[in-house]
Length: 237
Image (tube, rainbow, N blue to C red):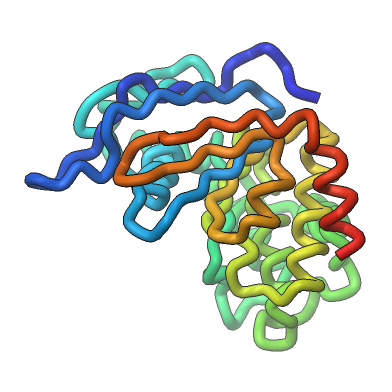
């Protein structure tokens, strides 16, 4: 369930490269426990927005407030620390270390945060239904299984926001459904989820859909009325 506490605010955020406005005067407010999809054509500013929210870039103008802290002008080292402590990242390309097992890939994320704990890493794998694949290398896992390892890795340090950049982009329909169902269960547990996607079906299952075009928000759609039905329909498909 969504809480009233704001976890993220973008206030008049712009990102400018020379004459190009990748983002232009973006205002966005996200409550703890919300599930958002960010959509739009290529070049609309989705990647730029996700990089700023994920502490991988800073805005040219405006403020970004994450969990009550203005992160807009933090230096690279500080952003790395904030990202490590508050953001769980899921990528389209997985970025798993090829010579480490599934559980070891998760323990690497623990290492950079605090201290590796194999029992906790196994619990994270169990959460995505992969405890029986813990000792497998990435090459021994399907694409869907690799993405589920990435989700477990993103969750291991209990982030404030789970941030996905096309997390189902490399998956077939069956594995996309599995991943969306994991997101549903995480949302039920109160995890804040923000997903960038080109897939309208994945976009439609979120509570709220943000449409970008030419660096601007052209639609902010409340889907809460159809949220449950969209999830049921997607699960059936």
